[in-house]
Image (cartoon, rainbow, N blue to C red; front, side, top):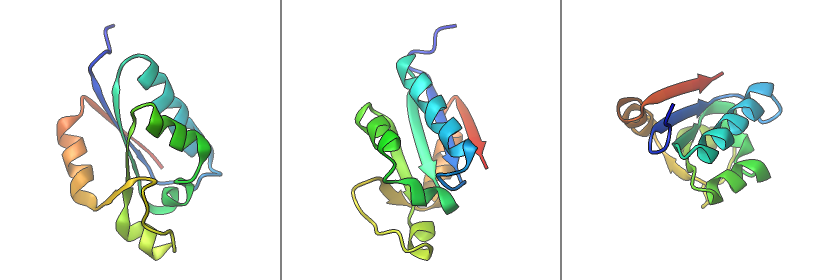
Length: 105
């Protein structure tokens, strides 16, 4: 199956030490290797993992990384250039514009 050019939306809501956080990163990495455009949104506890080296490496490989500004503020995570901080409107846009959308909770 040809995946080049397809769009994948990923929503991570679990803490960086949760297995689903790492599963999401591996899924994003595999998709990027296949030529998929990946849009990854960190919400809730996942905003604590924005400094994760593997996540930041994915960003340099072209993953479009977003983070919930409200979730970051509530957890004392500073707004920075680690991700594009935004609101839930971005999640809605990703749901509407990606070929597949996966939430890992």
